[in-house]
Image (cartoon, rainbow, N blue to C red):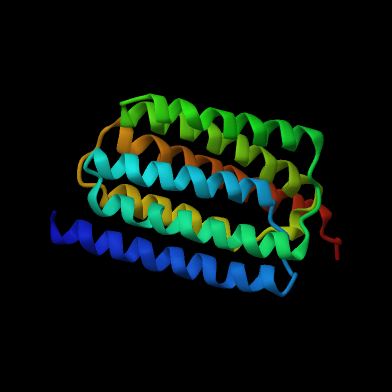
Length: 195
């Protein structure tokens, strides 16, 4: 493990804490209302990805993903307390499908197979957050997703062994977070009063 990778891993952890601390505070204060199912799925999938990355020699590149798993479960607890809205029939279908996909990981011996399945699950969770952001773009934090994107990029740079198992999930999360940032910014600009 090189010192530069460790430094990037630590910076990624710090960015993750900077990302989640005000986000959780805003949820607690009922200023933000994230989609609870998205974060439940992301907590499970981040934990699986962290273990898969670790087994594929990601090194410090897996540290932030493990922390993200824990923090996603904190968001679930806070979101449940504040009463999340916008849970549609489609959200339930995506949630159930995502939960049913997890046994596929358990049945595989391949960390890559686990990461592929979990990445598909993450995309299903992303759909729920995207749908909610379109309905209520001011109930999510653009800053949170900007920091998430930075954390994913730093995690990628901190990976010790680049291979599909260690790269697939953080690359997809970088792209989906960037897309969400763009959509929320566009919707907010579109709904802002003209002066």
